[in-house]
Image 1 (spheres, rainbow, N blue to C red):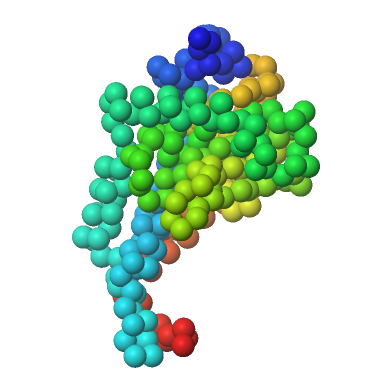
Image 2 (cartoon, rainbow, N blue to C red):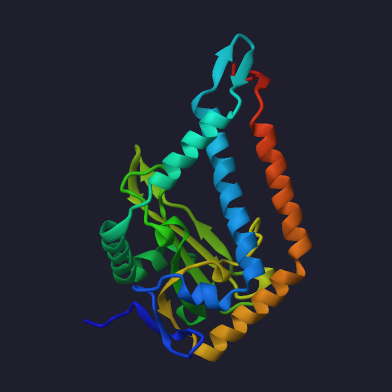
Length: 259
């Protein structure tokens, strides 16, 4: 059986094809500048903590007469939810088996995945299809909350005119389609709405690739240079996220307009 865990366009510092099955983060560590990797980490952690805070407030809200009380996301709740999130990822052999299964299914279902995408996207425009998000890092245990499969599609477009996003499908709490599909162009300008850093600079697992090594290296270099030029803007966003998290750590009482 073909070993599709190796991809000739994704090469390491020695010019050798990266084996994603053995060293999943190798390409990212060797090709994305440390400064960008550090910002990605800050953004990812803050995004998850903000999500946890909002989930906690939603799950524990109470109605008191005309008022809706959203509890403070206190230190105890924050630690508990973070520990639960970290503990939701598979480890060891289970992690390897589960990820291999996801990668194989995604590869087998590329036609199904693409049928969910905007039909105006012609096949010739697709350069890379990759697995990202928590599925790449873990994956997470089956049935975990908000544990869909992120599929990123790189389009041969310098603008964001062809960008699209398709969310997982559920019916009566049952997952019909677990794929969260995000299509973007290949420039910093086309990284996507509300995204601080292009997904190609994050760790990802290529399932389909039509780029050669030189082409991929050029795109990543251009994205890296453009991202570093926006460092101040990204840091400003990180500071705003921290401020918002501090606000969510406080008790919130709102007038209830639901009736």
